[in-house]
Image 1 (cartoon, helix red, strand yellow):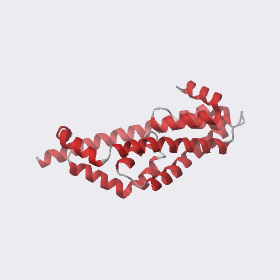
Image 2 (cartoon, rainbow, N blue to C red):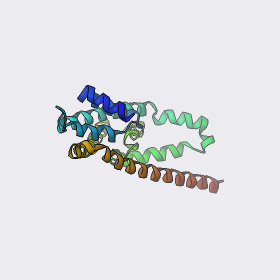
Image 3 (cartoon, rainbow, N blue to C red):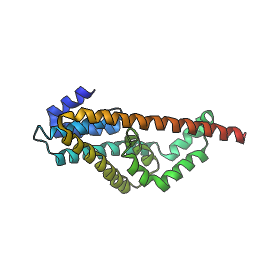
Image 4 (cartoon, rainbow, N blue to C red):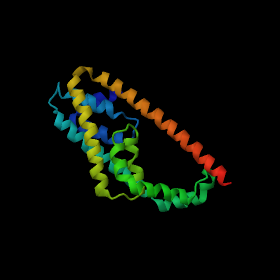
Length: 203
């Protein structure tokens, strides 16, 4: 995948970066770390500029985020209520659980969107619950843009600074991503255990 990404950026420049970053937001397994650090490196060996790469990558990120936000709007709370009413007993979920989660996102969603833009994988997927909770689109775009701009600026500048050694940075980012994934896995397991215990206690 890495070779395909770099070849596309080599061939299409800014347009390639925009399309890849937009796709990365919709399909998280595509690593933004490779796109951004290689994009930074390209500014040292092509007509691309650091500012230009940051701008088009941020526009691509926002475009992809809007697409996932739209998907979240289609999966709104009302639709999920129907699904839970029919199938919730299998997962031991109730409408009350759904509304608790939605209320939490309505309260902390703005900052959640911002900080999650700095976390691999979640940085893309967070757009879906934002859409589901009908988060104000203006605030969503504002905090998505700010968080994404920070992420993109750091990685593009690092890629430009290390030049041909950009792959070394990708290696470090892989370690960071793996640590984040491990923490998320532990948190999910703990959540499931606590959820099951709570349900058993009620029974």
